[in-house]
Image 1 (spheres, rainbow, N blue to C red):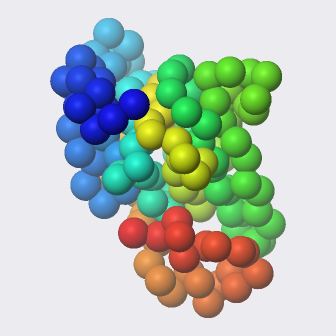
Image 2 (image 1 turned 30 degrees about the horizontal axis):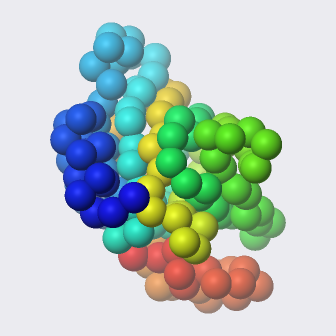
Image 3 (image 1 turned 135 degrees about the vertical axis):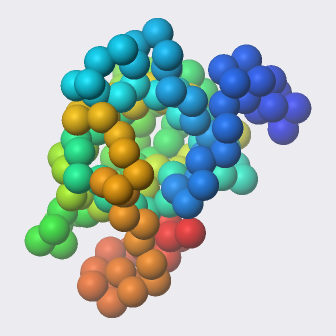
Length: 152
């Protein structure tokens, strides 16, 4: 898939660039009628991915289309996992549950062009629950390979 096809997906879902975190998103207005959660469509591409950040809310990610992505999760104690997400459950996990206060980043596996996700945030997303990682995190977690590649 080339850049024009990614632009078609952005147009189809009316996605906007997500400042800070990266990627493209839109609130799913059909499901955002509740004060209990937020539901969004989220797209990553070769040029824009979900940079390392954490939320004070829980998130549920589900891959609905596109290429395989890798998701880095870092717990407060420094334990980490790198999981693959794909809409094809035979290649990798389809969904991921991210607990609150877990550092997270998601990017395409090398060679991928794009991946589209639905993300449910519980309780609902607000700007004040978001913390973006800085390069200082490299000192906190020096044991995590390639960590710098997940930072904005």
